[in-house]
Length: 293
Length: 312
Image (cartoon, rainbow over the protein chains, first blue to last red):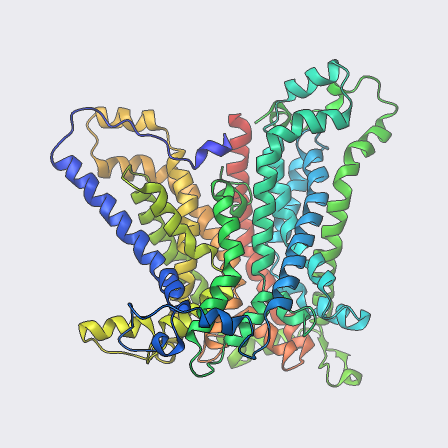
């Protein structure tokens, strides 16, 4: 049910409607193409600029056909003498992967207890998880900061892992609950009658059906952790700095640096673009906390 | 969906042969849920309670000894301070503008994408891309690469047509922040509305067409009522995310020129001004605002959810 919702459904246009109607269809197709190009233009321009030299990047009118170079990327990766982005990229990768793993470890059993073998009042529990997502991050920021300061957890990647887990756990529980509900009870019962134990049922019956959904959930959690700025900005310093915090170093202009900014923005966005396109079909379901399938 | 979800309250005893004892069994069912539940309560609810407590204290972290209970003084200061009141207003304007504009654009794009045309998959991918740029990177892109008054792309393109070449961020700071957010959030709205469009009853639409309904009538009397809850959901989820926006305000204007919203103000008042009590009071106000939105959001989500459950 869920996997087909967003996919293109062929529409039965009746036979024999040529002429103006067809022309209108083509026209609207062109409008859609135009809209797609307009929305993508800033990204295309960012990519092109990242391959220009700093002199060609800062011209008016813009130099569309300027010579291509990798200087922006060399500058960004620190061969030009600036701070190296590698520690922040490694921190972001570690924090995002570790929190995604922790989310899955906590959310999978919870989703099981909310779908396949539901506890009483399981909808109330589900809505409790959702309501925590609606509590703004700033509401708890100060106590978390004071706690971290007093326990020496400031500038520590593990604090971010815990906070990102709390940020993504409700989304994961909601998504996985809906994926696990798709496992037919009859199949589970048949396996039980045949004498299969719980681990076997989970591995042989539940996993094959729920795995694509679990993968999409993981990708979406990864994206949100990778993107996060406010916690990282407040709670990390030199050691645990993440990639978005590294990017805030470009907020004030530093002379000719457009190609470098574009290279940095693009490189740091690449994991998100890749994960997002990989999870495209389940993206809405995750972002709407499972409400839209 | 499965039968489990259609009969949620029914005891799950069907699947067990001989329950050792009712209470033990209930705990065995609950056990997988507890780690996640306890984790969420500790990490999200406790800090909020602490914020609530701190909000009643006059507490500047530079003068820790002068900390004392002040009742609602912080709240009255937040609500009477011109800057803070401004930031409440900015938050409302920012959220409402971004949500409404991206919802309307998203609806237009979803309607376009619901039609069949050559390259539809590719256009959909192009349209989703802005949502998949890291928010700080997107804000940097708009600030430096598009808005820059001397060599930004906008003024570069205006140069060709001989138009004026304004300093976008200085002249229209809030609009500059809003435009970048609309660019990122329109794809989100489009995805939700597209899912709504594709869940329409196509037989009903065909029947209406056979009965002579034109396209506008189909849209007005069939599509729009069906989309209503998807529009509500998009608006509410968008509001929840955008009320909390920090990245764009922090990056594009650093809260200057009247663009500081509440999250930025909270960040600034304890991180830079060290006013813990004031920051907490402002934080509690953000929460109250969010709860108002969230109450409606939960209602919409739950009605969609129950429909899904009962449809199965």
